[in-house]
Length: 213
Image 1 (tube, rainbow, N blue to C red):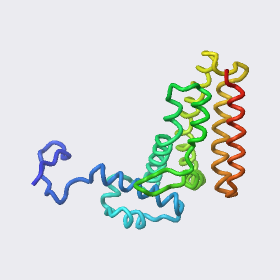
Image 2 (cartoon, rainbow, N blue to C red):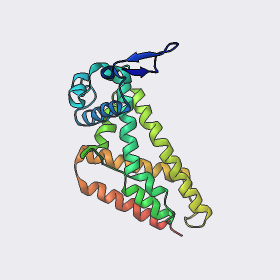
Image 3 (cartoon, rainbow, N blue to C red):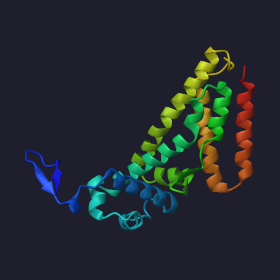
Image 4 (cartoon, helix red, strand yellow):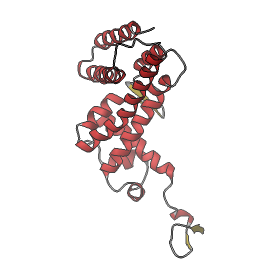
């Protein structure tokens, strides 16, 4: 028997085989949902699919999540957390010249993230989830906004330190870079023509270098 501290008012005991689901099981459910949502889409993935792939029981799932929708939010959070950690943000936080930081961060916008040896398309995930309902779209927007703010801060400091030309609005440049980045990813999903994204990336990097001081 193991002490059950989740019982209020009394000290209870729960057999070891009936322990409350762990954080590990929650992570396994979220990452399984993330992979399936990106691969098949939200509506084409059932709770049964997630349980079968994760090896979790229905009781464990509903201990952590009240609904499939709540699990969808958690999958978005995990996907974007991994995307930003594996790509853009780490370059924005270096001590390099701000133009170099911006160029590397732009190049690092991930089309794929690594999850347990499996590659997941961030474009597929964001495109599929944003079109489900307004709540998912807003969650994606909430994740994007801090990155826009961080880009703006890099540009603003670069202007103050006379490393970037002062004839531009840092906020507008942050919006342009973000829009171009998202656009390139979605264009690659729709057209599958790498030359288009290569040309767009080359243009934006040339433009950034023209602002270097």
